[in-house]
Image (cartoon, rainbow, N blue to C red; front, side, top):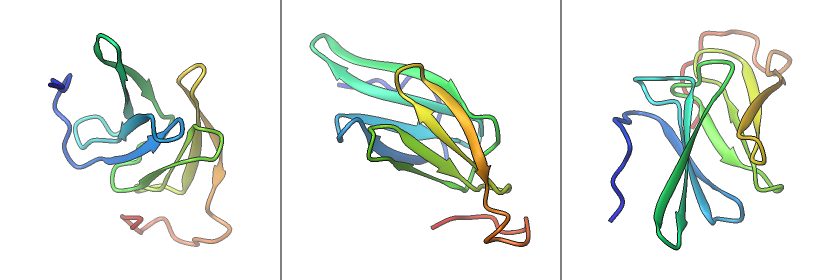
Length: 107
């Protein structure tokens, strides 16, 4: 049985690494935090990473290279995850397609 490492309310989740791992991001309690979860032969393992911007009420999606992209959530930033280092890098903003920073959720 998996025992979750801490409280996690209101965030987003996706699968990464060809659906072999889970990624939970931006809970209300810590809007810059992500938790990467994978099953090992001995049980469950998790790593923590931190985005540069808050993404609560944004969205996170898996990418074709096995990583992830996170966007929105009270700002226009989008970032990608390098799974070899568990590092998030800001790649740009959505300001060319969204003119106002007043939206709250990506669904």
